[in-house]
Image (cartoon, rainbow, N blue to C red):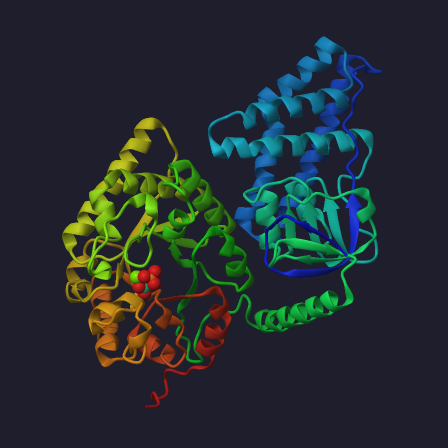
Length: 544
Ligand code: PEP
Ligand code: MG
């Protein structure tokens, strides 16, 4: 048995034969058989055909992976109409007397290198796209199929790299998973693989001997086993069966609304700690991300993550969610979440100490760096910002002022950013008591019942000795939730829960009756919760 490791794009297991995909080499001959005018005509004809293919691909992607993910093929169409690109091809034809294949390949490579050298992450990502469109035109010129033919038996595809168009064209019924040597977790190909729910590994070193051998792609453990040992194969088959059972539940509930028998609908979103969780969010069909605990980005780093590093992570999440809402909670560090480089003092009562928004409002540069990164990512989808640990109106106003400052700076610098909805976490009794005033300041509330329970019941949530006393069903907590919902609604705010209590099915009916608008739970809890919601009938009396 051979084992190779890489980076997993999606948790999941694929078992099957490996198939190596080798792309045709690019045209290397600079000499044309025809005149530059005739080569230009060949190019134009191929370009028109390529545009037709891209229209068809857009339609296919639209049906399979949604509008935002399909948009890449609209970008490809625009690139193929770009005047600079066309001028460059013409220039090579005329000055070098080259064949159209050569002119297109060279233009694709030149533009790709130029995009790759740009500072802007969005433009850098276009490097792969311009190569992709050039390859499409060359394939038409040379009469080669522009897609990888998978054959009769489903396989795990192995390639150096896959372009977005190759990925979306692959026949899903013949594709168990794919493995590439290159590619990035932020690429559109990776995003498409996640959206299409295909287990995939990138950054894997392979050789020709792999072709046709039996393998297990283990997305959970970022590796592939070639010629797996019999006991490993059995345990992987077992794991895959369990996944399938979960998948069966998923299939019956996927795309179904979270609506009670009598027609009351509620949003069910997912909580994530880092971008790697996004596959689970999609697999479980969450309606959005209700809590992105951004502090994990800081906890995983050796030093403050830069604005650019944060932007790339947020952008990846936002793009993958393809228009669905992503609520990013700003840095909630301190108390149990410590990173040495913050150099926080040791405190007597860290849970009541210097943490979360209190750090952000006093170390403004750290905060602004994050706000800028979030605002920039918001240009790529639907983003909300949520401030944690709020106890006063003053804090909310200060945080919003910094947000406005960041927008003004970005505008001044000509950096693109998107509009964001602003909300706060309600996780202190003080916030509940002044919820009416707070609601005047924001668009939404999200109840952090983990901390709300800790602060209301005066119970350290970290102390296992107190587990017995930690009771989130305490009437004080339930009344606080109700009060928050009512105050929010009085002022036009929507109200959700993102603490663990949101997944407690014994309270689902109570929450619906209270009028909560959203529940955000761990990805694996989304479908069981959907099932519960769909079984309830609020027109009947609630059982005691
Ligand atoms: C909460 O307090 O309920 C919450 C969702 O935030 P965290 O658990 O990250 O403190
Ligand atoms: Mg909290």
